[in-house]
Amino acid sequence: MEYAEKCTAYLQELSPSIIETLCEGAIKYCESCREHFTDEGLLIPENIKSREILQYIQPGGMSVMYVPEDESVVAFSLELSCDWEREHGMEWFIKNGKALYVGPFNGGIEHPWDDEDGLKNMTDNYV
Image (cartoon, rainbow, N blue to C red):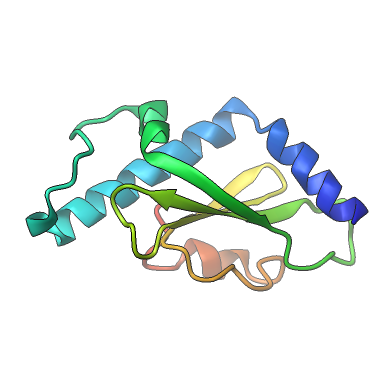
C-alpha cells in the first residue's frame, strides 16, 4: 500500500514537461484516430494545442501493477476515456519522471520495468 501511495503522490506532482509530453502524445493519438475513422466526424478541433486536449480526456483509474524490487522506481499507468476513441480509451504509462506510453488502453501494461524499449517501439505508442 505504501508504494501505491508513493505513486499517487508522484502523480499529483507531475512536472510540466511530463504533462506536455502526455498532451502531445494524446494529440498524436487523436490525429491518428481522425485519419483512420474519417466517417465518424470527431468533434475535437483540428490543430488543437498542447493542454487544450485535456478537455476531451476524462480520468478513469490508476494501476500499479506490482511493487518493483527497487522501490525507488516509480511506475504506474493511467486509464483514461477520450472523446476520439470511446471503445478503447487511452492509457498513459509513466516511469521515473518519463512518459513512456500514450496510446490505446491495452488492459494495463505488464512488467514495464523490464522492457522500456518494447514500450517505445510499440506501433500504437504516440510518445
